[in-house]
Amino acid sequence: MKANTEYITPSCAIKNQRGNTTTEMALMLLPFVVLLLGVMEFGWYFLHQHTLQYATREGMRLALVGEVLNDENGDPQTREASIKQVIHEKGEIGLMDIDPNKITMWRDQNTDNNYTGPLTFEELAPNAGNPADYMRIKVEYYHHFLNPLIGTFFPDPGSILLRAEATYRNEDFTPEVI
Image 1: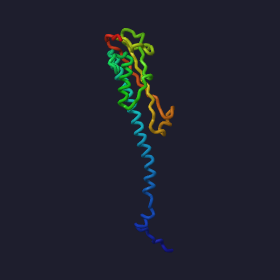
Image 2: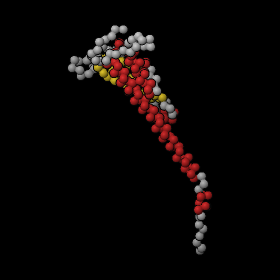
Image 3: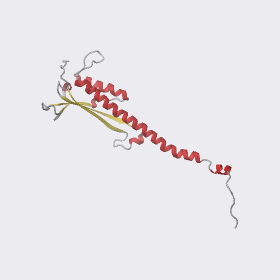
């Protein structure tokens, strides 16, 4: 028997692998692009979540000192309108358009005198509470996904409800009469 002495020359090996690089690139590019879009999408999601928390906290800070803002005519607004304006403005930092109707405030009616915290909350307290009242602000925002593929993994396709809450006790401020 005669042994097979045929050898593959380097030029022949290159000819046989023509298109391998393109195929490997195509196979690796799809998962890479999906991963990259996922990272960008969740970065956008976390930006909105943190901006919502920041805006709620800033609205709470304005509320607890009893401060009010002026409207575009220079007239003082109500405390509730001032809080909503601050939350809306701070939300714009993260490119969010927070709906003022999704901002709610509660005032505690039954806090004991040892300041252990609120027992029950009454929804939509007029004037955002009085001095020394316990208050809670809740802000809701629907985050819409940029990539429809990722949005399909959530209960409401294409969006998810983000919520931020803050609880505080009003300082002993002098209420302004408007």
